[in-house]
Amino acid sequence: MRLRTARLWTTHVSLTIKYVTPRAESQHSSEIHQSVWSEGLSVIECQDNQTLIEYLQKLWAARPQDVKHRKPFYVGICLGNLVPDHLHTLSLFSSLETERRRTRLTSTRDALNQKYGTATVFPASMLLARAAAPTRIAFTNIPELF
Image (cartoon, rainbow, N blue to C red; front, side, top):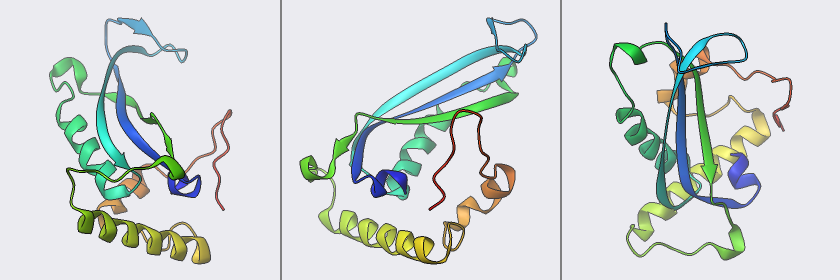
């Protein structure tokens, strides 16, 4: 929603996961021994949740799954190579109708959430995630909550 509010499109998404390990490759500032895995993908210019979730699912499936990588303590998602709205170009490879439907859906959801609150409308697939990872205010970053 922040991406759309800022009238930006992304062309790169990356996923970083830090795992607790008994013997550290490095040590986190919290003194947790860790190993770090990170991967990114170039994406078609997008700003809708569904497209980003599809790419994140590909990255999640590619993460290491051996014994050493069983206890994540940090998951980060980064959107990069941002393109302003006035420079956005349509993709030759994706369906124009699909993009229109997704844009209408996200615009409607954003309007309802802006009017009635951030938790009014969200994908059903996010029900468990919202309970497991509620919005928190970090020491260095205060989220925009409308």
